Structures are given as C-alpha cells and as structure tokens.
Image 1: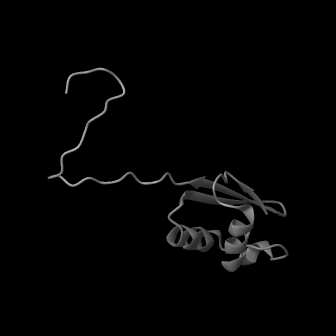
Image 2: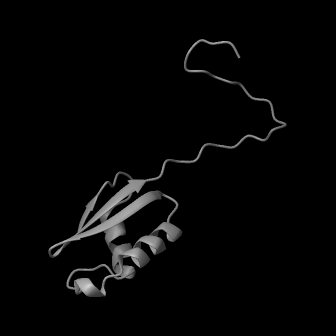
Length: 90
C-alpha cells in the first residue's frame, strides 16, 4: 500500500484507517471495495478533501488531498476590517 499526498496526517494513522475498512496487505483484490473504503473515510474525516484508490497489479496506490482549515465565519451584524491584497476602492 502506497500513500501519496500526506502532509499533516501520519502514514501509520492512514494505514490503520484503511485497514479498518478493508484495505490491507494480503487481501484479495476482488474482495476490496474501493468505493466503500473511500466513502467511509470521507465521512469519518474532515481533514481529507479527496481520496482515491487505484489498484495496479499487486499494489494499492492511495492518493489523498488534505482539506484546508475552514475560515472563521463572521455574522452579518458584526463589524470587521476588510483587508485587500491590492490597493483598490471599497
């Protein structure tokens, strides 16, 4: 099992979760349901924006795109500063 795209998540943590949902060394390829594994991990984790699993020969390649932290939402009635990247009129 090869995992690509990890930055903040540890490889061991991801391997344990993949194993929990049925992707582990020694398992027959026709017994691996990639869609179920992908959907379960996406439902369990907010820190993963996208995950894909590709089987090539006897290898499973797991591609992960980690989610960016959500910005703080400010209520409509609260005052705040607007900071632009460039000088413009607001």
